[in-house]
Image 1 (cartoon, one colour):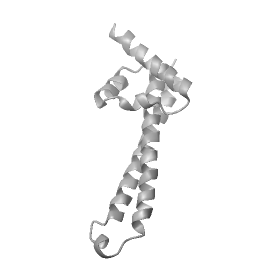
Image 2 (cartoon, helix red, strand yellow):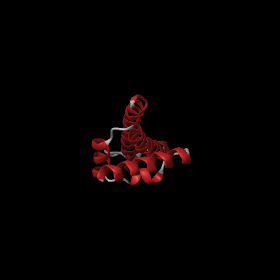
Image 3 (spheres, rainbow, N blue to C red):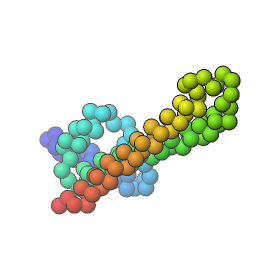
Image 4 (cartoon, helix red, strand yellow):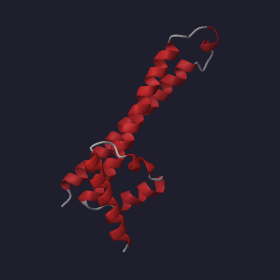
Length: 123
């Protein structure tokens, strides 16, 4: 009975992401425990597609955050004198945040590709 419910959730999520054609906002609202459970129980192409959709949504979220932080980094880099020259400078914080978000976006892309490949090879 549990497997049927989990499969139904995966199918609904994959259909929703296919219909919307964009990153599904509801996919980013899973708890960490939900995602781990989905990973453990995934064995069909639809379940792998649902996981790939989740990671694509996460990737889009991190890319958006990186883009915003890049703009903040640029803004802060224009004022690096006097009080803002103390360490850690605000410009350094922005650079670190940008690098973190860019790294996480790349990591989510790799995970999405992994599950897309599993979905393509599932029988």
